Image 1 (spheres, helix red, strand yellow):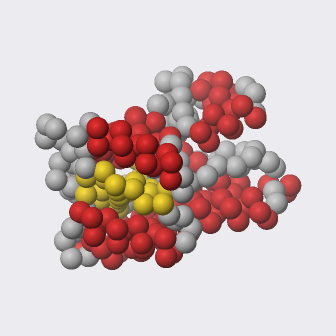
Image 2 (tube, one colour):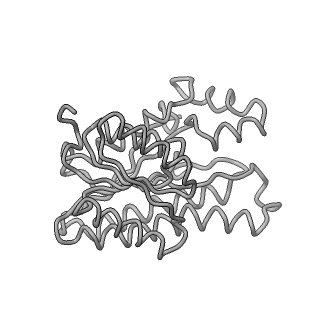
Amino acid sequence: MDKGLLTGKAVLVTGASSGIGAAAARVFAQEGAAVLLVARRQERLAALVDELRTEGARAEYVVADVTSREDAAMAVKSAVGTFGRLDGAFNNAGVGGDRTPLHQMDNETYDTIMDTNVRGVFNCLRAEIAAMLEHGGAIVNNSSVGGLVAIPTAAPYIASKHAVVGLTRAAADEYAQQGIRVNAVAPGTTRSEITTDWFARNPGLEDMVNSMTPQGRTAEPEEIAAAAAWLLSDRCPFLTGTVLPVDGGFVNQ
């Protein structure tokens, strides 16, 4: 492979079995990274790893649930054991949720969203930072434009993505002098399993959201992955604690 943004780096990707995570695995590998893919769906992970290896990439996978501290630590340990070190991580695993008025939201929905989107990122950050303390590294968390603005009838999701922004900024501040950069991407509407399902259950929603986006369209997952690759690379060494909207101008409205 030609030298790319991530050549020589070992990068972990969570939520790698579909959507933005799978796109990130492909983009990072194309940019020269050795990638460890983490998700719960083994068949999809195995198929993606086979695809990447066929294209000449170094790729492995681990089946893990990031809501478990032990699983998150195991995934990081596997990356270090396989590649010798961990240089970067894209904490992408997350869930959406039904559009429901806050006063009608049930506890199960709230707990599921917060457990995956917040605890999952927290678990991964703990393990990744510990693995990077000796040599530094870069971490990108996947938030959302929902982490920067309010969107009606999605209170737990909005709260969870605001929390990811908080975790990003806190970790960036705490570990800046240890050479660990922590940033986040905040995607706008992006084609994925979550959004496809969301749009199917809410007719007209995609058109409504796109009408609020200056570019007037839904992003492809590779566009988010490309932004994450840049944040993980050495091209932006003085950038940490930043939440980068990749949203077609949505938050400018």
